[in-house]
Image (cartoon, rainbow, N blue to C red; front, side):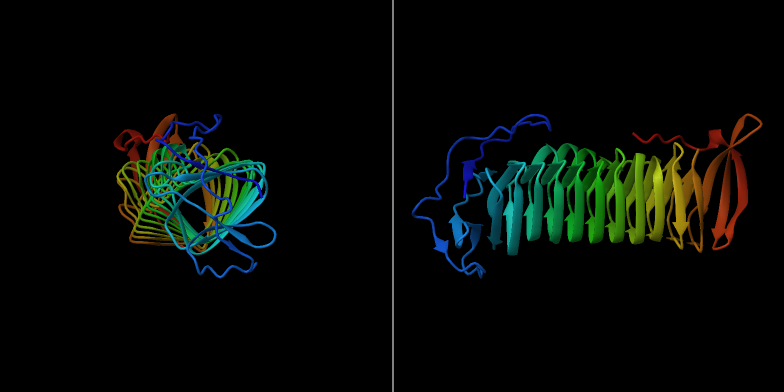
Length: 381
């Protein structure tokens, strides 16, 4: 078992391409460390335990003001018992398995909790919290296989993208997770999924904040499938719940997007290109400008499958607002969206007009037509 334990100093400003700067003070895992030979490890003693082939070795972790850093030098299995325990982990090309029993890992606002380049990581039954970085405040993963289950990502922040999670390339599965109270000064308060393939099941994104994409940003050709995903009470300028950009392909089944707030457009979902198939409910989402439920532009393509739009509000298009985009589908329900269920820009004889519609399960009926100058512009950055 080759583990390198380091104590973190003040927060460096890292980038994805640069090696993280950390202090070189080695922590004690020597002959005085506690051991358990029972391979099941019953978590009778709080702490981080490492499997060594014959049993478990207790790893010393630093106090809150001096967070310990673990640099992996081989495939590693850890168990986290109790907490919060102040530890960050980095691995490059190795496989990491971490499970827990009420386990909590914290970076105490000093550093990112987990950085993974290549290899694989599996976290189960773990809460990770209070990380900070330029990208991926809690977790940064690049071209890796990532599995997160039965845990939480809480109160992490990023200066650029991915307050909670930044996953680029590779593949990821999230099951029974809570992504909550994370922040980004740029995009993706809860998470950024950039490229690769992602499966999310029975997971909630709530109370996350960002300038763009409060809950999650889906971009760079990511293929994402979400089943029973909740996106609630997130805040952003555009795309408070979800933002879809470029060539991303997204399918939600039994999704619930509720109480998200955009200070510009797209409180539930904002799309600038990409493809979305949506089955589920958009309820009580509010945008100051366009698209309380959905704001669609730049040739975005949406298929609605028994989607429900209830009490969403915006200046234009309480349910859906769209420009140079397409929507199709059947079996939808539109109820009490303000000021209209759907609003779109249409070109007629070289003049751009806007048109409002009321919608039901059979289709949409035109209500009002105005010159485009009457509606505010809303760019998605």
